[in-house]
Image (cartoon, rainbow, N blue to C red; front, side):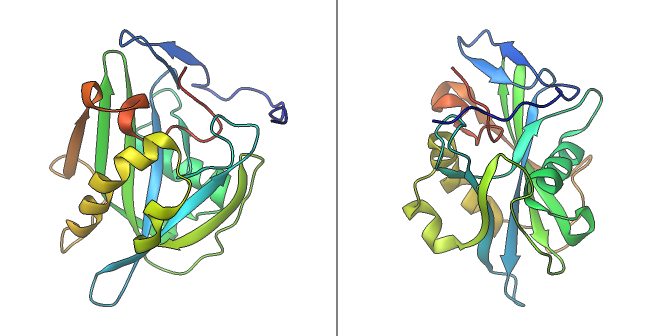
Length: 198
């Protein structure tokens, strides 16, 4: 495994030693973006995934772009920022419609589910990605997935099918599903790319 690139830490970067016994990346929690491409009828056909860099924990596996939240940054803003930084996703090219929150004693990870609203050039835009690709929904489970994302995928897949008729940015009253860390592996959600729980 090669060494990770060196860069100045961003606000919120750092480890949290959780009361669950694991440590998690993101002093203020973390978030990631799961973008779906749909048919005109609304069926999810593909999702945007990130092939993790070799130097990262479980390097070479697939997950979603994500990372540590900045101080006072909400989860949706964090997920959109990270997806822009890591996968070239323009914030105005996607429409968030739900969140899936996994809460630990003193840390949380939020997966923001979103729809593509116009085409964009998804690509690896930093050293945390080997590649960024649209993957058919039916093929996701067959990939070598980040273990936490593999466990989370069935529930996330179901949430894609539960998209409301009108998609709005998550806020008060938005669809939110909460996970239980006691029944998950490594938190049961895709970890911030390039980071790990140990």
